[in-house]
Amino acid sequence: MKLSTKLLLSSACALAINTIAFAHDMIPGTPQKNAILIKGATLHTVANGVLVGSDILLENGKISAIGKQLKAPEASTIINAQGQHVYPGLILTASQLGLREIGAVRATVDDREVGEDNPHLLAHVAFNTDSEIVPTIRANGITHTQVTPVGRLIAGQSSLVNLDAWNADDALTKSAIGIHVNWPSQPGYWVAKKQRPKALEKYQEQLARLTDYFEQAQRYHIAYQHDNTIAKDIRWHAMVDLFNQNKTLFVHAEAINEIEQAMRFAKQFNLKMVLIGASDAWMVKEQLAASNIAVIYTNAFGLPSRSDEDIDQAFKTPSQLTNAGVTTAIGYESAWDSRSLAFAAGMAAKYGLGKEQALKAITLIPAQILGVADILGSLEVGKSASLVISQGDIMDYQGHKVINMFIDGRAVDLNNRHRQLYEKYQQKVTAN
Image 1 (tube, rainbow, N blue to C red):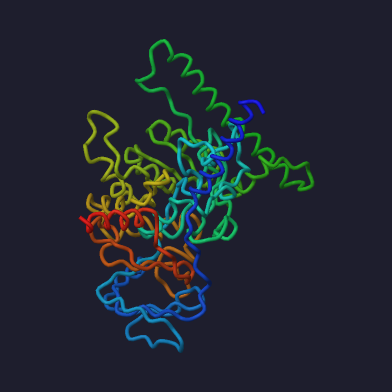
Image 2: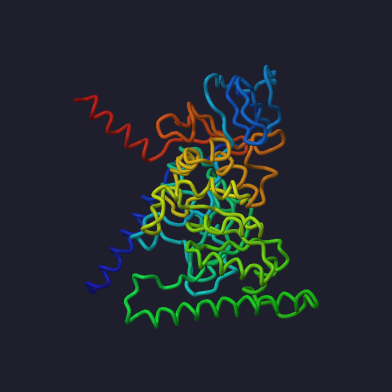
Protein backbone atom coordinates (compact mmCIF):
# COMPACT_ATOMS: atom_id res chain seq x y z
CA MET A 1 0.00 0.00 0.00
CA LYS A 2 1.37 3.39 -0.95
CA LEU A 3 2.11 5.94 1.75
CA SER A 4 -0.43 8.39 0.28
CA THR A 5 -3.18 5.76 0.51
CA LYS A 6 -2.28 4.99 4.13
CA LEU A 7 -2.31 8.69 4.93
CA LEU A 8 -5.72 9.09 3.29
CA LEU A 9 -7.21 6.19 5.26
CA SER A 10 -5.75 7.38 8.56
CA SER A 11 -7.09 10.88 7.91
CA ALA A 12 -10.55 9.48 7.18
CA CYS A 13 -10.50 7.48 10.42
CA ALA A 14 -9.39 10.52 12.39
CA LEU A 15 -12.19 12.57 10.85
CA ALA A 16 -14.76 9.91 11.75
CA ILE A 17 -13.51 9.81 15.35
CA ASN A 18 -13.57 13.59 15.58
CA THR A 19 -17.11 13.74 14.19
CA ILE A 20 -18.25 11.34 16.92
CA ALA A 21 -16.38 13.41 19.50
CA PHE A 22 -18.37 16.49 18.46
CA ALA A 23 -21.67 14.82 19.46
CA HIS A 24 -23.21 15.16 22.93
CA ASP A 25 -24.85 12.26 24.75
CA MET A 26 -27.85 14.05 26.33
CA ILE A 27 -31.07 12.16 25.61
CA PRO A 28 -34.09 14.18 24.44
CA GLY A 29 -37.02 14.37 26.83
CA THR A 30 -39.98 12.03 26.52
CA PRO A 31 -43.44 13.35 25.57
CA GLN A 32 -45.37 14.73 28.53
CA LYS A 33 -47.73 12.17 30.11
CA ASN A 34 -48.62 13.61 33.51
CA ALA A 35 -49.55 17.18 34.32
CA ILE A 36 -46.88 19.51 35.73
CA LEU A 37 -47.88 22.25 38.18
CA ILE A 38 -45.36 25.02 38.84
CA LYS A 39 -46.40 26.82 42.03
CA GLY A 40 -45.73 30.21 43.55
CA ALA A 41 -43.42 31.59 40.87
CA THR A 42 -43.02 35.02 39.37
CA LEU A 43 -44.45 34.55 35.87
CA HIS A 44 -43.05 36.80 33.16
CA THR A 45 -45.93 36.26 30.75
CA VAL A 46 -44.72 38.87 28.19
CA ALA A 47 -48.30 39.21 26.91
CA ASN A 48 -50.01 40.07 30.21
CA GLY A 49 -47.33 41.54 32.44
CA VAL A 50 -45.59 40.01 35.44
CA LEU A 51 -47.65 37.83 37.82
CA VAL A 52 -46.06 37.44 41.26
CA GLY A 53 -46.72 34.32 43.33
CA SER A 54 -48.71 32.59 40.60
CA ASP A 55 -49.09 29.03 39.37
CA ILE A 56 -48.89 27.63 35.86
CA LEU A 57 -50.23 24.22 34.80
CA LEU A 58 -48.78 22.23 31.90
CA GLU A 59 -50.83 19.43 30.33
CA ASN A 60 -50.36 17.47 27.09
CA GLY A 61 -47.51 19.72 26.01
CA LYS A 62 -49.50 22.95 26.40
CA ILE A 63 -50.19 25.59 29.03
CA SER A 64 -53.64 24.70 30.36
CA ALA A 65 -54.07 27.19 33.23
CA ILE A 66 -52.48 30.23 34.86
CA GLY A 67 -53.54 31.65 38.22
CA LYS A 68 -53.17 31.45 41.97
CA GLN A 69 -53.80 28.38 44.11
CA LEU A 70 -54.39 26.10 41.13
CA LYS A 71 -55.35 22.54 42.01
CA ALA A 72 -52.97 19.82 40.92
CA PRO A 73 -54.57 17.12 38.74
CA GLU A 74 -54.22 13.53 39.83
CA ALA A 75 -50.73 12.00 39.39
CA SER A 76 -49.22 15.36 38.50
CA THR A 77 -45.68 16.57 39.20
CA ILE A 78 -45.55 19.62 41.47
CA ILE A 79 -42.62 22.05 41.31
CA ASN A 80 -42.31 24.52 44.16
CA ALA A 81 -40.97 27.65 42.46
CA GLN A 82 -41.41 30.22 45.21
CA GLY A 83 -38.86 32.99 44.76
CA GLN A 84 -38.07 31.77 41.25
CA HIS A 85 -38.91 33.17 37.83
CA VAL A 86 -40.71 31.52 34.91
CA TYR A 87 -40.14 32.81 31.38
CA PRO A 88 -41.29 31.74 27.92
CA GLY A 89 -38.56 29.82 26.13
CA LEU A 90 -36.20 32.27 24.44
CA ILE A 91 -36.15 32.26 20.62
CA LEU A 92 -32.78 32.66 18.90
CA THR A 93 -33.08 34.27 15.47
CA ALA A 94 -30.71 34.46 12.49
CA SER A 95 -28.32 31.87 13.90
CA GLN A 96 -26.03 29.19 12.49
CA LEU A 97 -26.47 27.05 15.59
CA GLY A 98 -26.43 23.39 14.60
CA LEU A 99 -24.92 24.20 11.21
CA ARG A 100 -21.44 25.19 12.39
CA GLU A 101 -19.49 23.30 15.02
CA ILE A 102 -15.82 24.22 14.63
CA GLY A 103 -15.03 26.84 12.01
CA ALA A 104 -11.55 25.45 11.31
CA VAL A 105 -12.89 21.93 10.65
CA ARG A 106 -14.64 22.00 7.27
CA ALA A 107 -16.46 18.72 7.87
CA THR A 108 -18.39 20.35 10.74
CA VAL A 109 -19.49 23.44 8.80
CA ASP A 110 -22.79 23.16 6.89
CA ASP A 111 -24.01 26.75 6.96
CA ARG A 112 -23.63 27.45 3.23
CA GLU A 113 -23.84 25.83 -0.19
CA VAL A 114 -21.74 26.36 -3.30
CA GLY A 115 -22.99 28.83 -5.89
CA GLU A 116 -24.47 32.33 -5.74
CA ASP A 117 -28.19 31.60 -5.93
CA ASN A 118 -29.80 28.89 -3.78
CA PRO A 119 -33.31 30.06 -2.84
CA HIS A 120 -34.58 26.47 -2.81
CA LEU A 121 -32.23 25.12 -0.15
CA LEU A 122 -33.60 24.40 3.34
CA ALA A 123 -31.01 25.01 6.06
CA HIS A 124 -32.69 22.83 8.69
CA VAL A 125 -31.93 19.69 6.66
CA ALA A 126 -28.31 20.07 7.82
CA PHE A 127 -29.21 20.93 11.43
CA ASN A 128 -27.15 18.79 13.81
CA THR A 129 -29.24 17.96 16.87
CA ASP A 130 -26.20 16.25 18.43
CA SER A 131 -24.05 19.38 18.31
CA GLU A 132 -21.98 19.87 21.47
CA ILE A 133 -22.91 23.55 21.29
CA VAL A 134 -26.69 23.04 21.50
CA PRO A 135 -26.78 21.98 25.20
CA THR A 136 -24.65 25.00 26.17
CA ILE A 137 -27.18 27.26 24.44
CA ARG A 138 -30.17 25.57 26.10
CA ALA A 139 -28.59 26.07 29.50
CA ASN A 140 -29.15 29.82 29.15
CA GLY A 141 -32.86 29.52 28.41
CA ILE A 142 -33.05 29.20 24.62
CA THR A 143 -35.62 26.62 23.51
CA HIS A 144 -35.91 27.38 19.77
CA THR A 145 -33.69 28.74 17.03
CA GLN A 146 -34.15 30.01 13.50
CA VAL A 147 -31.66 27.88 11.56
CA THR A 148 -30.26 30.35 9.05
CA PRO A 149 -27.99 29.79 6.03
CA VAL A 150 -25.28 32.32 5.20
CA GLY A 151 -24.07 31.46 1.70
CA ARG A 152 -23.28 34.11 -0.89
CA LEU A 153 -25.97 36.20 -2.58
CA ILE A 154 -29.22 34.21 -2.18
CA ALA A 155 -28.31 31.86 0.65
CA GLY A 156 -31.42 29.70 1.02
CA GLN A 157 -34.35 29.33 3.41
CA SER A 158 -34.44 29.33 7.19
CA SER A 159 -36.64 27.22 9.45
CA LEU A 160 -37.52 27.20 13.14
CA VAL A 161 -36.44 24.21 15.23
CA ASN A 162 -36.61 23.26 18.89
CA LEU A 163 -33.41 22.39 20.73
CA ASP A 164 -34.36 19.03 22.23
CA ALA A 165 -34.79 16.46 19.49
CA TRP A 166 -33.40 13.24 18.03
CA ASN A 167 -32.93 14.56 14.49
CA ALA A 168 -33.67 17.51 12.22
CA ASP A 169 -37.17 16.30 11.31
CA ASP A 170 -37.99 15.72 14.97
CA ALA A 171 -36.76 19.23 15.81
CA LEU A 172 -38.70 21.04 13.09
CA THR A 173 -41.28 23.55 14.34
CA LYS A 174 -41.86 25.52 11.13
CA SER A 175 -40.21 24.94 7.76
CA ALA A 176 -39.27 27.39 5.01
CA ILE A 177 -40.07 30.61 6.85
CA GLY A 178 -38.31 32.85 4.38
CA ILE A 179 -35.50 33.35 1.88
CA HIS A 180 -32.23 34.97 2.93
CA VAL A 181 -30.34 37.47 0.80
CA ASN A 182 -26.89 38.79 1.70
CA TRP A 183 -27.05 42.32 0.37
CA PRO A 184 -23.94 43.29 -1.66
CA SER A 185 -21.56 45.55 0.28
CA GLN A 186 -20.22 48.70 -1.30
CA PRO A 187 -16.39 48.89 -1.12
CA GLY A 188 -15.32 50.86 1.95
CA TYR A 189 -12.37 53.11 2.72
CA TRP A 190 -10.22 50.06 3.47
CA VAL A 191 -10.15 49.01 -0.19
CA ALA A 192 -6.88 50.08 -1.80
CA LYS A 193 -7.13 52.86 -4.39
CA LYS A 194 -5.88 50.62 -7.21
CA GLN A 195 -8.38 47.90 -6.34
CA ARG A 196 -11.37 50.21 -5.91
CA PRO A 197 -12.52 50.32 -9.59
CA LYS A 198 -12.57 46.52 -9.76
CA ALA A 199 -14.34 46.25 -6.40
CA LEU A 200 -16.98 48.79 -7.48
CA GLU A 201 -17.50 46.90 -10.73
CA LYS A 202 -18.05 43.65 -8.83
CA TYR A 203 -20.46 45.41 -6.47
CA GLN A 204 -22.53 46.77 -9.37
CA GLU A 205 -22.52 43.34 -11.03
CA GLN A 206 -23.91 41.74 -7.86
CA LEU A 207 -26.69 44.33 -7.59
CA ALA A 208 -27.60 43.84 -11.25
CA ARG A 209 -27.48 40.05 -10.85
CA LEU A 210 -29.78 40.17 -7.83
CA THR A 211 -32.32 42.40 -9.60
CA ASP A 212 -32.22 40.29 -12.74
CA TYR A 213 -32.73 37.09 -10.75
CA PHE A 214 -35.79 38.46 -8.96
CA GLU A 215 -37.22 39.78 -12.23
CA GLN A 216 -36.94 36.31 -13.75
CA ALA A 217 -38.49 34.75 -10.64
CA GLN A 218 -41.33 37.27 -10.77
CA ARG A 219 -42.02 36.42 -14.41
CA TYR A 220 -42.04 32.73 -13.46
CA HIS A 221 -44.50 33.54 -10.64
CA ILE A 222 -46.86 35.34 -13.05
CA ALA A 223 -46.64 32.51 -15.57
CA TYR A 224 -47.26 29.91 -12.86
CA GLN A 225 -50.35 31.80 -11.67
CA HIS A 226 -51.81 31.56 -15.17
CA ASP A 227 -50.74 27.98 -15.81
CA ASN A 228 -49.54 25.78 -12.95
CA THR A 229 -48.63 22.98 -15.36
CA ILE A 230 -45.61 24.84 -16.77
CA ALA A 231 -42.18 23.26 -16.44
CA LYS A 232 -41.08 23.70 -12.83
CA ASP A 233 -37.81 25.43 -11.98
CA ILE A 234 -37.02 24.48 -8.37
CA ARG A 235 -35.15 27.72 -7.68
CA TRP A 236 -37.78 30.10 -9.01
CA HIS A 237 -40.60 27.93 -7.68
CA ALA A 238 -39.17 28.31 -4.18
CA MET A 239 -39.68 32.08 -4.56
CA VAL A 240 -43.34 31.99 -5.62
CA ASP A 241 -44.58 32.59 -2.07
CA LEU A 242 -42.32 35.63 -1.78
CA PHE A 243 -44.38 37.41 -4.42
CA ASN A 244 -47.59 36.28 -2.71
CA GLN A 245 -46.21 37.71 0.56
CA ASN A 246 -46.76 34.29 2.13
CA LYS A 247 -43.03 34.06 2.70
CA THR A 248 -40.58 36.63 4.11
CA LEU A 249 -37.51 38.09 2.44
CA PHE A 250 -34.79 38.26 5.10
CA VAL A 251 -32.13 40.75 4.03
CA HIS A 252 -28.77 40.73 5.80
CA ALA A 253 -27.42 44.29 5.65
CA GLU A 254 -25.48 46.56 7.98
CA ALA A 255 -24.52 49.87 6.33
CA ILE A 256 -26.97 52.69 5.67
CA ASN A 257 -26.64 52.56 1.88
CA GLU A 258 -27.24 48.79 1.87
CA ILE A 259 -30.35 49.16 4.03
CA GLU A 260 -31.79 51.92 1.84
CA GLN A 261 -31.15 49.91 -1.33
CA ALA A 262 -32.79 46.84 0.21
CA MET A 263 -35.85 48.88 1.19
CA ARG A 264 -36.24 50.18 -2.37
CA PHE A 265 -35.75 46.65 -3.68
CA ALA A 266 -38.51 45.26 -1.43
CA LYS A 267 -40.84 48.06 -2.52
CA GLN A 268 -40.05 47.46 -6.21
CA PHE A 269 -41.06 43.80 -5.99
CA ASN A 270 -43.75 44.30 -3.31
CA LEU A 271 -42.08 41.92 -0.85
CA LYS A 272 -42.53 41.42 2.89
CA MET A 273 -39.07 42.21 4.20
CA VAL A 274 -37.25 41.71 7.50
CA LEU A 275 -33.86 43.34 8.03
CA ILE A 276 -31.13 41.31 9.77
CA GLY A 277 -27.95 42.78 11.21
CA ALA A 278 -28.97 46.42 10.89
CA SER A 279 -26.04 48.29 12.46
CA ASP A 280 -27.12 51.54 10.79
CA ALA A 281 -30.87 50.98 11.06
CA TRP A 282 -31.15 53.78 13.62
CA MET A 283 -30.38 56.25 10.81
CA VAL A 284 -33.51 55.27 8.86
CA LYS A 285 -35.81 54.23 11.70
CA GLU A 286 -38.71 56.40 10.54
CA GLN A 287 -38.55 54.98 7.01
CA LEU A 288 -38.41 51.42 8.36
CA ALA A 289 -41.46 52.06 10.52
CA ALA A 290 -43.36 53.66 7.63
CA SER A 291 -42.52 50.68 5.39
CA ASN A 292 -43.56 48.18 8.09
CA ILE A 293 -40.16 46.49 7.93
CA ALA A 294 -39.22 44.53 11.06
CA VAL A 295 -35.63 44.33 12.28
CA ILE A 296 -33.65 41.48 13.80
CA TYR A 297 -30.84 43.42 15.41
CA THR A 298 -27.66 41.36 15.90
CA ASN A 299 -25.15 43.96 17.10
CA ALA A 300 -26.17 44.41 20.73
CA PHE A 301 -22.53 44.22 21.86
CA GLY A 302 -21.16 46.12 18.85
CA LEU A 303 -18.59 48.90 18.63
CA PRO A 304 -19.13 52.30 16.96
CA SER A 305 -19.04 52.07 13.16
CA ARG A 306 -17.59 55.57 12.72
CA SER A 307 -15.19 57.83 14.59
CA ASP A 308 -17.92 60.39 15.31
CA GLU A 309 -20.52 57.86 16.43
CA ASP A 310 -21.67 57.64 20.06
CA ILE A 311 -19.69 55.00 21.92
CA ASP A 312 -22.94 53.43 23.13
CA GLN A 313 -24.76 53.58 19.78
CA ALA A 314 -24.89 49.80 19.34
CA PHE A 315 -26.37 49.41 22.82
CA LYS A 316 -29.15 51.97 22.39
CA THR A 317 -30.16 51.15 18.80
CA PRO A 318 -32.92 48.67 19.86
CA SER A 319 -34.61 51.32 22.01
CA GLN A 320 -34.32 53.94 19.26
CA LEU A 321 -35.90 51.59 16.73
CA THR A 322 -38.66 50.51 19.11
CA ASN A 323 -39.48 54.10 20.09
CA ALA A 324 -39.79 54.96 16.39
CA GLY A 325 -42.36 52.20 15.90
CA VAL A 326 -40.10 49.57 14.32
CA THR A 327 -40.85 45.97 15.30
CA THR A 328 -37.46 44.99 16.73
CA ALA A 329 -36.16 41.59 17.81
CA ILE A 330 -32.71 40.96 19.22
CA GLY A 331 -30.83 38.12 17.53
CA TYR A 332 -27.42 36.49 17.28
CA GLU A 333 -25.95 35.47 13.93
CA SER A 334 -23.19 33.19 15.23
CA ALA A 335 -23.39 29.78 16.87
CA TRP A 336 -21.35 29.12 20.01
CA ASP A 337 -21.64 32.56 21.64
CA SER A 338 -25.37 32.89 20.99
CA ARG A 339 -25.74 31.59 24.54
CA SER A 340 -25.39 35.31 25.43
CA LEU A 341 -28.72 36.19 23.76
CA ALA A 342 -30.45 36.99 27.06
CA PHE A 343 -27.53 39.18 28.13
CA ALA A 344 -27.68 41.07 24.83
CA ALA A 345 -31.30 41.83 25.65
CA GLY A 346 -30.22 42.87 29.13
CA MET A 347 -27.75 45.34 27.63
CA ALA A 348 -30.50 46.84 25.46
CA ALA A 349 -32.77 47.03 28.52
CA LYS A 350 -30.16 49.07 30.36
CA TYR A 351 -29.78 51.45 27.42
CA GLY A 352 -33.37 52.57 27.14
CA LEU A 353 -35.36 49.54 25.99
CA GLY A 354 -36.59 48.53 29.43
CA LYS A 355 -36.79 45.00 30.84
CA GLU A 356 -40.27 44.06 29.63
CA GLN A 357 -39.64 45.20 26.05
CA ALA A 358 -36.17 43.60 26.06
CA LEU A 359 -37.69 40.27 27.10
CA LYS A 360 -40.31 40.68 24.39
CA ALA A 361 -37.48 41.21 21.87
CA ILE A 362 -36.19 37.68 22.48
CA THR A 363 -39.55 35.91 22.90
CA LEU A 364 -42.81 37.22 21.47
CA ILE A 365 -41.43 39.54 18.78
CA PRO A 366 -39.26 36.80 17.22
CA ALA A 367 -42.32 34.53 17.33
CA GLN A 368 -44.34 37.19 15.51
CA ILE A 369 -41.65 37.73 12.88
CA LEU A 370 -41.34 33.98 12.29
CA GLY A 371 -45.10 33.42 12.18
CA VAL A 372 -45.40 31.24 15.30
CA ALA A 373 -46.83 33.72 17.83
CA ASP A 374 -49.92 31.54 18.12
CA ILE A 375 -47.87 28.80 19.81
CA LEU A 376 -44.67 30.40 21.17
CA GLY A 377 -43.29 33.59 22.66
CA SER A 378 -45.44 34.16 25.75
CA LEU A 379 -47.02 32.41 28.72
CA GLU A 380 -50.66 32.11 27.70
CA VAL A 381 -53.26 29.38 28.02
CA GLY A 382 -53.30 27.21 24.91
CA LYS A 383 -49.73 27.92 23.87
CA SER A 384 -46.88 25.43 23.84
CA ALA A 385 -45.49 24.50 27.25
CA SER A 386 -42.05 25.73 26.21
CA LEU A 387 -40.67 27.66 29.16
CA VAL A 388 -37.79 27.99 31.59
CA ILE A 389 -37.47 28.39 35.35
CA SER A 390 -34.64 30.62 36.54
CA GLN A 391 -33.43 31.41 40.03
CA GLY A 392 -33.14 35.08 39.09
CA ASP A 393 -33.41 37.61 36.29
CA ILE A 394 -32.71 35.67 33.09
CA MET A 395 -31.14 38.76 31.49
CA ASP A 396 -28.63 39.22 34.32
CA TYR A 397 -25.17 37.62 34.05
CA GLN A 398 -24.91 36.81 37.75
CA GLY A 399 -28.49 36.00 38.68
CA HIS A 400 -29.97 34.12 35.73
CA LYS A 401 -29.16 30.43 36.45
CA VAL A 402 -31.73 28.38 34.54
CA ILE A 403 -32.69 25.35 36.65
CA ASN A 404 -35.55 23.82 34.64
CA MET A 405 -36.59 23.82 31.01
CA PHE A 406 -39.61 22.38 29.24
CA ILE A 407 -40.15 22.17 25.48
CA ASP A 408 -43.69 21.18 24.53
CA GLY A 409 -44.04 19.89 28.08
CA ARG A 410 -40.95 17.66 27.86
CA ALA A 411 -38.40 18.08 30.65
CA VAL A 412 -35.05 18.99 29.05
CA ASP A 413 -31.65 17.81 30.30
CA LEU A 414 -29.64 20.97 31.07
CA ASN A 415 -26.32 19.18 31.42
CA ASN A 416 -23.66 20.35 28.96
CA ARG A 417 -19.96 20.35 28.18
CA HIS A 418 -19.35 23.62 30.02
CA ARG A 419 -20.95 22.30 33.20
CA GLN A 420 -19.05 19.02 32.93
CA LEU A 421 -15.72 20.85 32.70
CA TYR A 422 -16.69 23.10 35.61
CA GLU A 423 -17.51 20.10 37.79
CA LYS A 424 -14.32 18.34 36.72
CA TYR A 425 -12.02 21.18 37.70
CA GLN A 426 -13.99 21.95 40.85
CA GLN A 427 -12.76 18.58 42.08
CA LYS A 428 -9.19 19.71 41.54
CA VAL A 429 -9.85 22.93 43.45
CA THR A 430 -11.49 21.16 46.39
CA ALA A 431 -8.74 18.51 46.41
CA ASN A 432 -6.16 21.23 46.99
